[in-house]
Image 1 (cartoon, helix red, strand yellow):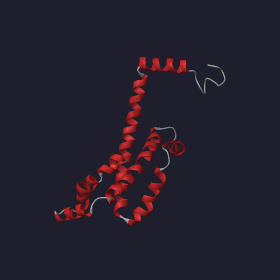
Image 2: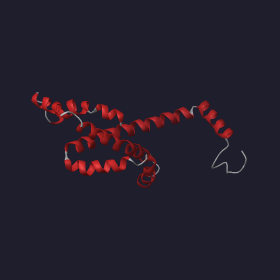
Image 3: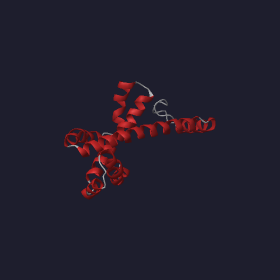
Image 4: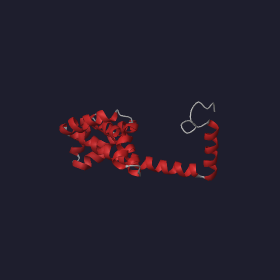
Length: 155
């Protein structure tokens, strides 16, 4: 309001409040919120699926732990905002760019949590599953993944 900054860069609070009131009245704020929530949920679901796959791979193999696991550890520390320039360069201003940012913000944390959870399962669980005839995907989906769920929830 003092005129010190351009209203384009920092609009007065009265203009912001007027815009919010008009956006609520015409329904555009609700529509935009629904689209944003949809993008977040889709990106999160894809990121969780990829992160689970990477986490299970890194917990199963020393090679994957040394490659993907260390990459995940390094990239997980980056804030999601850091992926925006790359997303804009690679995808332009599209839905794919926004999904990419959400996926990259999700997948590395989930991969680390899955790896940690799968490695912390007591060995007796795997032996008991093997004794009862569970092998391969069945063991991973019915024993390892449920037992590591507390780590995934904390991610």
